[in-house]
Length: 123
Image (cartoon, rainbow, N blue to C red; front, side, top):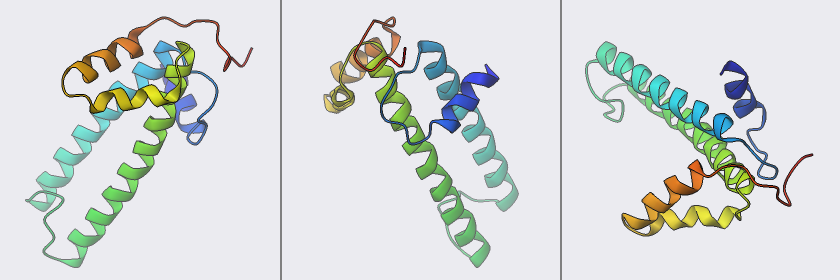
């Protein structure tokens, strides 16, 4: 599990290759848990939502959280594209999520599909 999360961060900007189901779902779950816990702690300490800016400290927290969110978003984008490659789909299938309801359901199915021999394999 820790190895999957380490791979997630070491392949931050790798948009080619593949990622297994385990290497996809472990970082997704860990990022949701860490993000929720950190936001709750920070909002509890400052006493208001992170996006509300009243002082320079609030501004620094807001900018810092947005930079971290951007890094995690880029890493998740590359991971998702590698996961699509692992199930022998193009990275452009990520856009299926823009179709309301049906697109999100189909996207989850694509993320659950087993690995297939494909042109992106690193073997």
